[in-house]
Amino acid sequence: QVQLVESGGGLVQAGESLRLSCAASGIILSNRDVGWYRQAPGKQRELVAIITSGGNTNYGDSVKGRFTISRNTAVYLQMDRLKPEDTAVYYCNVKISILNYWGQGTQVTVSS
Image (cartoon, rainbow, N blue to C red; front, side, top):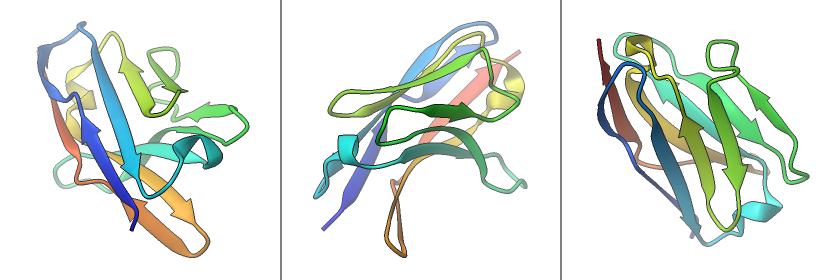
C-alpha cells in the first residue's frame, strides 16, 4: 500500500523560508516522478514543482527562482523568499500507472 506523508509546513512571515518533506512507504520515491502541488482556499490545485526519476526538475511560473525541489530517500521542497500568495495546503503526488497517490497535505501560511 502506497502512503505519502508531507511535513514541514507552518506559519512564517513574508521573505522567510520553509522546507517541506515528502516521505513514502510502499514505494521508492527515487524510482518515480514526484510532484509538489498546492491548493489555496477557493482555488484549483496547481503544480508547484516536479522532479522526474531521472532528476529533471520543472517549476510553476509563480515559484521559479524561489523554490527548489530535491530528493534523496524523501522528496523536499525548499521554499525561499515566501510571499503571502504562497499560502496554501501543499501536497505530494506520485502517479503509478493509472493511479494517483496524494499525501494528506501540509499547511503553509505566509503572513505579510
